[in-house]
Image (cartoon, rainbow, N blue to C red; front, side, top):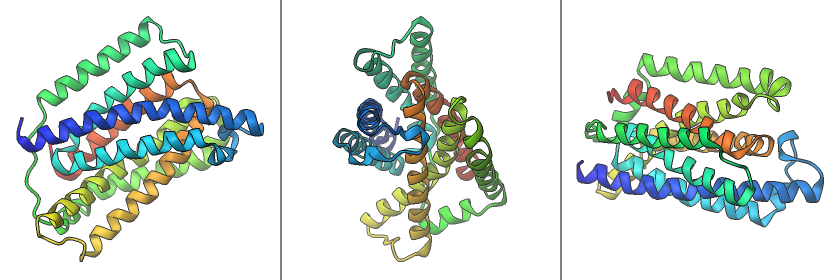
Length: 266
């Protein structure tokens, strides 16, 4: 493992710990807000915005995401993203003891399989090609194959949001987590581009003068807000031990697919 990949690896581990804990803290906050207002986030309530515990969970997640953001600047997405498996273990264990959402034997087996799969991917993670400018990333993002992927994601998200979410969003966990995962794959590619731009700027190659950098920043903001909204709905509606692994698997799979298409990292 190169020094750059090692930095990304350590940051990704720290990120997963914070994000895994944030699931539990936010779930506790959502429960308190629902009990106080009588309107749950899963049915469109936003009373959790007045709940301090939910904000603590959000801050914990932001810390984890910042570590994740920096990790993407050092290591390829196919190395960083699978390490999110640790967040599943953290959230599953904490949910078992704090939220009393019992983890059964098959759930434990699933956690072990996530760890094994992530270790295999990390061991065989490819070396990333050096990127000299944000414009180089822009040329990757505007290639026909990736534009087709982005178009497909946007269409699927609109179908899930406007057709499936009102009808079966509260009975099928794949709807809310699907929206989060699809948008997440786009946010990771944008975070990777933005992180690389900031890293290059600190090295003396200012990338903030290019419009492409600000475009990637806008995509990150839109994607993260969408993810946060529907992740809250998923956590409020379904068991954390169900939401966390399904979200992880879908998000990781889509992110690796997007990374392969955009960065040609096999």
